[in-house]
Length: 294
Ligand code: AMP
Ligand code: MG
Image (cartoon, rainbow, N blue to C red; front, top):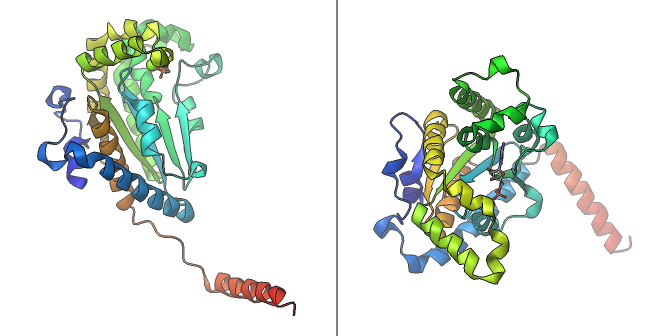
């Protein structure tokens, strides 16, 4: 599994080119479609074990950021990848168009409020990156953000990206493992998925007219993603450019990347101290005494 993750991990934005990544890629001979379901089930099981230790150890936390164009499979990926994990240890936060309260704050405010506690996994379904993606593609949105006009200059996007990189470095230094996933969908596959949503009554709810209008900005989004990944990929907060034209493969790469990062932490259930062992022994003696009615 590690080798597949290595193919898509970006830890240095220098020279990063989105066009070098094929949305249809399925890692050739490394993974066969017929083995994928079993591999995913195995990954989900492994993730569940690691998450238990993460929680028990109560030191590290994990932040998974999911970004993508519409219909790339963010929701389904979250559902499948997290299906085995204790719900008490995971929080999913969806970043929709910001509320008036959010717009009255700095753009990282929403993200800070949703950060996972130690021992927890936080999933951002969209994230603070929307402020350098949708807002970059539609710069008129900046006007809703109540910024002092003299702070909105021509370098605003590189300044924001610099702020995000600094924020993520800070998180890493605080023990938050930051993993960022770009589910990389082709325009043709998006067209097919939109059509499927329009052809099945049960999928109507998934379609919004807004999706089609954003599709018209495809190239500008691509440029914004290129710039965002190039400016913020680092060792301590890598991006994974995950091929998204095949859902089964997307899920496998995401689960493998999270497992890989957790395994690198060498998580352990904490060892009790001598005093704790003594207290445990006293508790055992007391409970046993109760059972025998002594
Ligand atoms: P969905 O994830 O499909 O439910 O859509 C959520 C929508 O909210 C997307 O169109 C996002 O681009 C939009 N959105 C999220 N964050 C922001 C933001 N900071 N400013 C403007 N729109 C946003
Ligand atoms: Mg949508």
